[in-house]
Image (cartoon, rainbow, N blue to C red; front, side, top):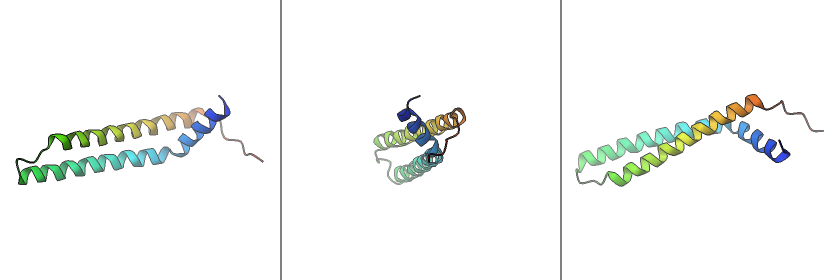
Length: 87
């Protein structure tokens, strides 16, 4: 593994918890938007839900990608040797 690849992998491991938080935040945003759009549609049956459903789908896909990065960071964490202190 080159030095650049090692830095990349270690940076991903350091961001592991961030990926999980972003994934959870994406799920919360998608659920909130779903509730909001359902209420708006309930109050006005002519409210256009289709384009907003696409937005929710994109948010969910982004949350899925963040969860995938979290899992990959966990695998990298197990496979990387311990970092040696630089002096």
